[in-house]
Amino acid sequence: MFNRYLTYYPAAIQFVLLCGISSMCLILGQYASGLVFEKMAGIPLTSILSLNEISPQLAYQIKLLQPFTQVLCLLLPAWLFAYFAYPVPLKYLGAGKNINFHFLVFAVLLFAAALPFSSLLEELSRLVPMLNPKEPDIQDKLYTAMLKGGKVSDLLFNTLVICLIPAIAEEFFFRACLKQVLLNWMRKYPFTAMMLVAVAFSAFHGQLSGFLPRVYLGYLLCLVYYFTGNIWYSVLIHFLNNFLIVFVAFWSERGLLPFDYLEQSHLHWTIGIASLAGTMALIYYFYKKRVVFVPVEIEKENEAEEDAWPGKPL
Image (cartoon, rainbow, N blue to C red; front, side, top):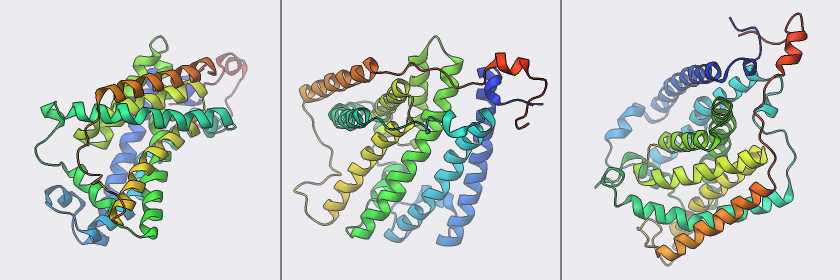
């Protein structure tokens, strides 16, 4: 049926195929993860949903499973789609460009500036009954259990499975792949396309209490990639956001923090507004230095001149 790279076809067809590839990988990932987890823990993976408490041993087994699941459910479909979409998959995913030192520095500054307003959004979420369940949901319990451990080996392991691998897998799927397709489809409404990606990204995590902050941070990640064309800046910000939580939890487990990082914090609204203003200033910097975003696609003019396509059929 398809005898050309996918970027030759209309964006609507690309979106449908991306959804199909993602669905198959998701089914495969859930099935494989269920088998592996039941082999390790001796209980079905779905039984976690009914647990009131998650033991340290169970949390460790879940952490072992997470990289496996992330690769199958996110990184694999992103790579497969890029492979069928363009002759150079890494270029399609925005991973083949050189790192600009100034962009790198400003990406770190953007992460730092965005944190207070993100915390303010989390506080505002508590005012929305649907986003503030009376009891912690299963995702809250899982994250809390996975962050336990005060050894250096715990810190290194958590950095790998909670910070690095999810940052790469999620950015490659949501920002580099899904956003690319939606921007190609909604060329006249790029910021709407990026908002859809941010909402999908937040919903994927399934954590109600963090829904609004994740939409906000997800949208910023989309903007950074949109203005730079390089996925690695988004990966860096994503990694730093996850690592901050892991690092604070590590020192808390060692009893070296004067506060409980799990307690709900109260941030004065003026700090949150100042954070938003600083974030917008840094986004404006990226905008002024931006590389004009052009969806990666095969040149149809060149394709039309060829008698036969030398690429890969689906």
